[in-house]
Each structure stands twice: as structure tokens, then as C-alpha cells.
Amino acid sequence: QVQLVESGGGLVQAGGSLRLSCAASGSTFNMYAMGWFRQAPGKAREFVAAISWNSGNRRYVDSTKGRFTISRDNAKNTVYLFMNSLKPEDTAVYYCAYARALYGDLVAVAPSAFEYWGQGTQVTVSS
Image (cartoon, rainbow, N blue to C red):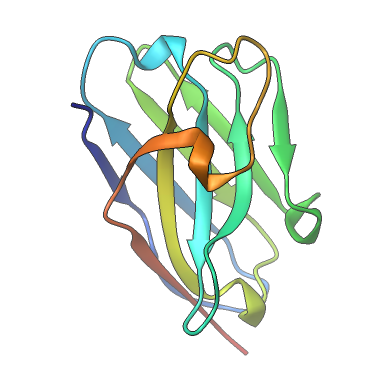
């Protein structure tokens, strides 16, 4: 069983920045892809970004390209989401997720490809 704990959310003005962190338990973190998803009120959970086990492959939803950066530190069992130029439409609960299987250098974007989820951290961007 893997436990994920997110931190770093908060209230920020439009144009501001935040860094989300997600710490994972266990000894196999460095073998699995990780992802970030978000869910706004009344909307479905949405893929935001994902990173392969060795950081060699990263994917982003189009609405965050150029503004968000996903990275990981396997020595610290932690994945990060750096969010710049935040917009009110980025407001949501952000979840980190741990891949269900070993995908090599592939990066999945579907929620079904991830097995473990954090409890979420709220990001609110005011206009």
C-alpha cells in the first residue's frame, strides 16, 4: 500500500505561482510514473501532468503547457508541480497519483492508469 501526501496548495492571485509537493511512502517510488490531476466543483477529474519514472518523459494538458512544470526527486520520493501564471480557471483540488503498473518510458493520462491517490490539496486563484 502506497500513501501519498500532497502539500503546497493555497490562495493566490491571478498571475501568481505555487509549488505543489507530493510525498510517497514505500521503496518503489523510483520505478513508477506519477501524475497530477485536478477537480473543480461540479466537474470531472482532469489530467494535468504526468512524468515517467526517470523524468525522461513528461506530458501536460494543453491548458497548462508553458505554465506548469512537473518534476520528481526519486531520492526524496517526491513529485512536484510548479504552477506559474495561474489563472482563475486553475482553481480546483489537485491530486497526485501513483501509476498502477510499470509503463517504462510511457506516461499515462487516464485516471484508470493510476492506482494510488493523495487526499488532495486546494488551489484557489482569485481574479
